[in-house]
Image 1 (tube, rainbow, N blue to C red):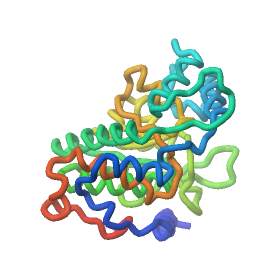
Image 2: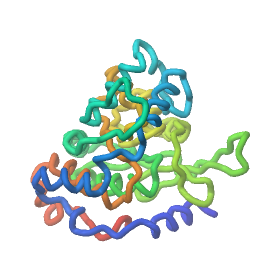
Image 3: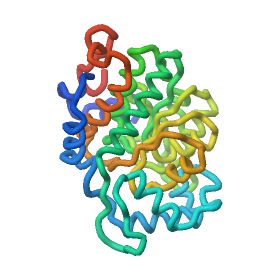
Length: 296
């Protein structure tokens, strides 16, 4: 199947958006409650044994957990990384615990999304080029698409390097292809966009064009940070690589939240980011912001 057909089929599976995705002021406690109701915050999908296991694999150098980043174990012990996760999630984690729930507070999500909005607003004000990509199509791509619209309405441009580029790994019976849904990049297997931790698609993108700012997650974010490109990122509680990179001073903004709930649940994240743009309540009326569905 042609990559444009794959993207079109994926777009048809995404939900229609309601008025909650139109930029306007919201009370912070309303946004916080909505994050918990939508399971973006609250009890994380990944339990403590999974979080601990991923930290251990990261420190052992597992490529799947490194997201394309090098030097993540330098000076970091297991307890240090677990503490980074707890701090970013806003809820303590018992360092002696082995099993049980991991919790994510909504307030740090709102703060970090506001920081993403600040970065995007500044980039838009400069007319910067943005590169947006996700390893979680069907979850984060709607949020990213609306943030793209917001930034473009204020002066940013979105680049789509390596669109349609195709390659095959020796152990696979299919090609990987880079595709874009509007300005949101992802990889497909020729049938559908795929969840991935891999950094190679972002590496290929950056070989074609170096943007001014990246908005991404998983290996897309890791590869951009490794390349020294300013990056704002999303990570789940079991994605410690990006948090270690932040602790190393290699990136500044990492939102820790559940990254695989229904895409419409991320509207509070969008509104928290939108509030960082000047005159947010006027964006729809005067700045060309459109909200007429998930994708044009």
